[in-house]
Length: 116
Image (cartoon, rainbow, N blue to C red; front, top):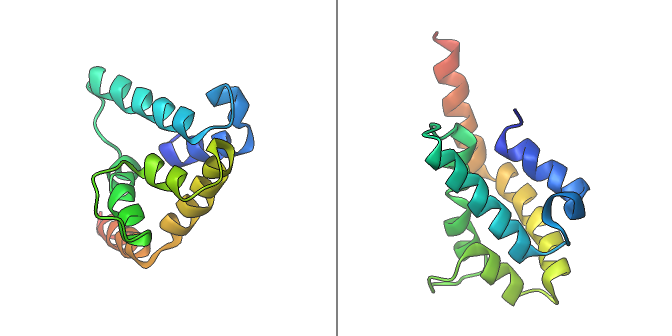
């Protein structure tokens, strides 16, 4: 099975295949279904899923938004339309995964694995 970040990269390559149409709202609905189904099946959260939970806070900080709007609504607000917002999501997601916060998490995980 693909991990979450591989799945997101596949969606980026072929959004219509996964989402019906290239739309940030469709992506958010898709991811809600993904997380809901994993929860219903009792599947433990992966490290990537735990990491992605920080994306909301990261987006709020990145756009200097203090409201409780979800990440997709924030990105859409600062975009031209649903399609452009989806494109911007993938740019932001790439930035998020390469950020210092993300790198520090990876180093901690790598250090834990080197001792086993």
